[in-house]
Image (cartoon, rainbow, N blue to C red; front, side, top):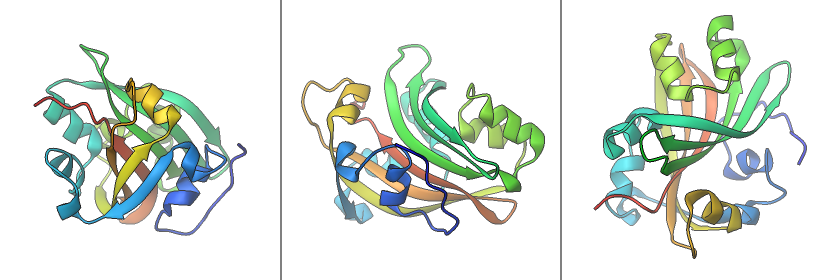
Length: 186
């Protein structure tokens, strides 16, 4: 799938998915929901204005590492498809699609993000980038084959996710789709 530039905000689910997939159904069937339609503990994992890196590390009580599954670069933007996994158990905990406007980040922050070794939230926090996460939508998802494979599901188990924006230094610089694993500790 070829990368398609997009300048407008806020993120549209299909536009984020189109960065890496031929169509939305390749990833799963999405239904927008309000917070009351998302069961615990997924509501607590998703319905907030905080970084998902910090949130999943606290919930799973482990540091997470990033695996960049695919990425695209243009002169102005960097996009990546990622999987966050716990460091100790290597459990996949979050699938994400990220699109960054590189013009709003310093060269050292951009270089670390583009190194693809560190989760985005951790880079922004460690570099003291003034940031504000804004939750836009919550989603109930019937996962497609790829989400099932990435999360290690033998059959389709409902997943939950969100779209969000990260404002860096007051400017909407990062568009996100974040989906948490349906396999959470009791």
